[in-house]
Amino acid sequence: MRIRPASGTSILRIATDAAGETLAAEHIAASGALSDEGLCALFVTTDYDLAHLGKALARHGINNVIGAATGCTIGSNGFQKHGITGFFLPPKRFFVVKALIEDVAHFGLPDARKLAGTMRDELKRGGPASPKAMFGVVMADAEARCEERLIAALGMEFAGMPLVGGSAGDVYFNPAGHPPGSKRLLYEGRALQNAALFCLVASHSPVHALSHNHYGAGARKIVITDADPERRLVREINGRPALAEYARACGFSKPPAHVAEYAPYPLMIRIGGQYFARGMQRIYDDGAIEFACAIESGVVAAIAEPQNMLARLEEMFTDLAKTVGPPELVIGFDCAARTMFMEQHGLTEDVARILIRNNVVGFAALGEQFNTVHVNNSFTALAIAGPG
Image (tube, rainbow, N blue to C red; front, side, top):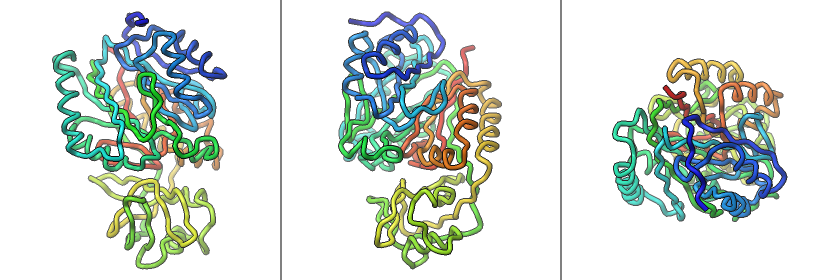
């Protein structure tokens, strides 16, 4: 069964908290005129089974879908620990070329070059001659732990074009419910693990991409002196055991035992004139620290100084509106560590109101991708202007 063409030009936003994949698929099918063209993206909390959801959607003729599993979705109801959010980019305004990277752990620059050539050829054959904007969207399985290589390779091949993305998974929220080996991505009805999805989009509307955080780079500096980037481990800082030295730099008299205590103080690393945060993910008994992004020996980093999250977010959206006008849609990848920070400080409802007002649809990610850089502790987003 082929679903009817979408007749409108407006971006559709999708939201359901239906119990079970069958009813959720019914709600999604009823949300508007979807089609096999354009792009339907879904963000799905991990209490749904992606394989079952893909089959349920197919029964409604909805096959052209990509999706990511998450512990928390973002949409018209704010943050949801149970539910599905998403969007549909209509083909009258957006031409989309999709690619599935099945073995993302071994994806490198030669693969990216070949993939880019194939996707550009498809764009030339069927896409608009002179789109107002081009952009890319990436979703990767966080368990594969290779986002640095993935986004660097794609970013080099599509240099100058904004790329945004998020890492799928649930370990910040519900480790027991989403164990290793879980299938975290959905691609045209298939549930997948150790994979990535990439969409190249030609748009008739202007877009703007950004990576935002609410931290400033403080005066306290540290040097990474022993690290294993492949495992995202840091063993020594300033030539001393990593955990003790990091805790000292954060101002603790002794190292806290839980990573949540360090959430307000990620490392700030300067890349291309912009500071990006590097947050802690796990502490080991030997004093080593696992970060959510790779860090190499020799890197100089500043200890972050948290600023007012709400004020910074409002300021970001004010600046964004000056660039593209009030956005029709903001595709948002908000770090799960930020979600935890909001909950700890009672900010969740206030942040949700800001995101709802600015038409944000996305999910709490276990890492975010921005142009050529894998980041975390960020709100990484792409805003799409309304038609006209």
